Length: 295
Image (tube, rainbow, N blue to C red; front, side, top):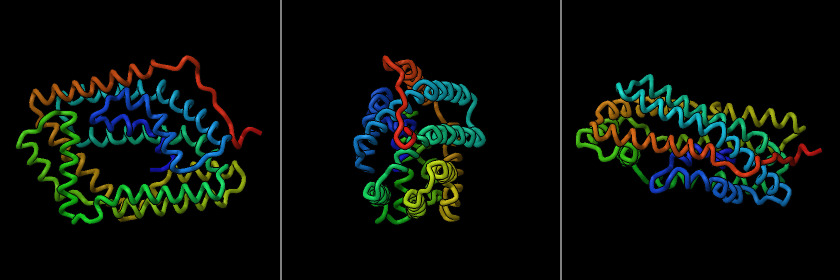
């Protein structure tokens, strides 16, 4: 998890099994602050700045982004009435990626000031936590054979779809299993990419020059991180994106009336929650702070 993912409320909002959207979203600030503590022990000035900027970021997200998500979910539901296509799946993926990039771009000023103000000890902590999170994600898969990893992927995919469409039929389970061998385990390539990226990020912060130059470099590093993927990870990403699109289209086109109703209900519920959250605002508009740029 990078620093920017502290504020990735989109991802949290989709991690809903066992939790409601509103409960998760209304506690994302607490989660972000806890995670920030893992990455950097902030001094008083940094902590005050982070708290203020996080409130500003979440207010922006709540008022400008959640209505967009709600609208897209309703449009997605209507589009699926006449079935799904590969093209629609890739368009949807691009839309989700665009949401995440918007969050990254909006969070950049906050991250720029925090990282520019970081001490060597804080950067050591950041680097260690970054590596720890990478290991935490990959460790459960380390001892699995490729075949075991593919079976686990199929199980995780099936469980994710069941949240949205309800119990799967035997035919649908077999369909997912038929795509299993096409999935390429990517944990190792992902971990290598993370190491390359984090090494460059920390090195860039340590050699920081002027703040203006630093912000430009951090923006480029953050929004163009694909250049650190490497051929192996990029090829795996591309291949697996196609697998996800193909299996999702095939599965969505096999939904029975009950499952289609279940999907509509879920998408509508999440869209309604997003809409309600977008108008459930604090009494006062959060005020931005400053750290490096105060003077």
